[in-house]
Amino acid sequence: MIKAIYSFNGEMHTSDDAEEIAKIYAQKPKFIWADIFLENHELTIEETDLLSKTFQFHEMSLEDCLFPQYYPKVEEIGNYIFGAIHGIQLKPNYFQEFDESIYELNFFAGKGFLVTAHIDELFFLELLFEKTKTLRQTKNIEIEKLLYGIFNKTVSSYEFTLEKIDEKIELLEDEILASPDPKNMEQILDTKKVIFALKKIAEAQQAVYVYFIRADIGLIRKEYLVYFRDISSQIARLNQSIMLRSQTVVSLLEVYMSSVTVKLTEVMKVLTVIATVLMPVLVISGYYGMNVVFPEYAFFSEKGTWYFAVSLMICAIVLLLLYFKRKKWF
Image (tube, rainbow, N blue to C red; front, top):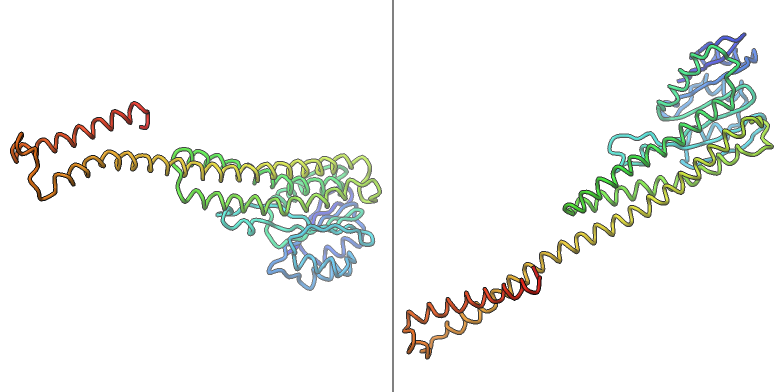
């Protein structure tokens, strides 16, 4: 599915027909942006002709569009620059299936034209397309500004993901400190997996954005280089932030293990106190459980000896509890 926006005589027009777009491009409009949504990872015959014959894009670039590699790429071929960048459009259960939230956006940029291609529906592109369509002064529309807008939204998607990760980490911290649970371990590992995947794609993206701050690129005019330097700095800061989150989740794992150890220690302490308190009871009951005539019978009689044994057990328990309390063992 294709749609395009272009300007003629200071007015904005749109089209969703590949053959019509080809005719429009032949008339050399001041500006044209064509966006292609690759349904089922395929180009129609009309779209293929538009890209290969009208725009004269190289077949290797078209192949990269059809078979995304989830690895960034930028290269100058003839009169255009081809690039592949990656962003994040979070989906439900993204902590468990984060890879499905990663999208690839391919672009062809040249003097007066921009072509974007993607296999996922990208909502920010829809908004940018509609915003461009409503502009009345087409003189304010430049390829550099469009590229900057696309790059900015793509990089900002990492920041939004980091905010979600921060919220998850804070929630896990509260749960772990309150009462560590085995499910927390699974959640920590899911968060660690997301951060690792985020780090893997974000680090590689930096090479693409650095390419556009070079002064020798004919496509980007000098007055617009500052915009792309801002994007390059932003992705560099994001990579540092991702590294900090990676360290934080490792610390969180250590906190979980420490909390579990403390909880286990408390349980063991209680069991140890109980076992120690009952030890005199076992000794005394074992002693008076022997089938012999005890000397105490002469003083307390057989029935009185039972009361004496029970009293001895109670006294031993009380004395041990007082001793433990004095030592502040509980």
